[in-house]
Image 1 (cartoon, helix red, strand yellow):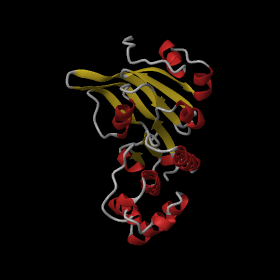
Image 2 (image 1 turned 30 degrees about the vertical axis):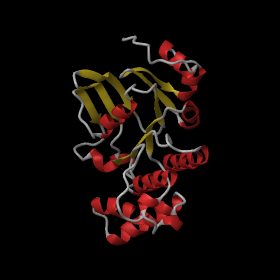
Image 3 (image 1 turned 30 degrees about the horizontal axis):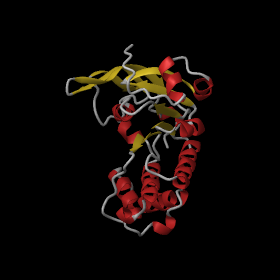
Image 4 (image 1 turned 90 degrees about the horizontal axis):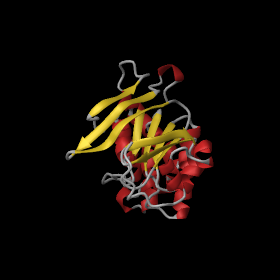
Length: 248
């Protein structure tokens, strides 16, 4: 984990826009992510939640605007962040080897790769599955392995895209416990979810998107007590927003 003196944060989005196929999918989003808080990005399907995370993580460049890691100071911010996807990609090797491979790519010694791998498997409850083929694991076990692989990298910032979307309640509970532990260890969490209950459980701050626009970004307490934006109010009441074409 990077120390406070070498933090890549804050992360600033300056009028970030993304266009594909002649359509603007992300529209002039300006916001800042400081250290500490867990941010949960919510909104209806098609709001641009996953796309926003990919822009922040650097997987795709914005069409317009800037994504700036203000603390990077010339260093590569990609080395201080990681991302776990809704359907993580598992390599054709054991659970342990999946983690060791990611660590080896960062240039760690073989001994340190083994040590960090064993620690990550233990912290995510996967030690007994270390030698099992990763692709033979259950969906929930694969998601825990993806979290273990990311955690072993000791990222300062971890992006999570709908990490429990395909999981049953028991597996969801386990994954949420791991996310809490990663946060407690000092990693900045920025995640998306379609589950309002999960957002209430995990969020310190909420960012609400609709049709590619950010309509609200505030503390979780204030948001769930009563959003200022009418679209956000309708969303947390459970109303369908697919027909709301309001553009601001």
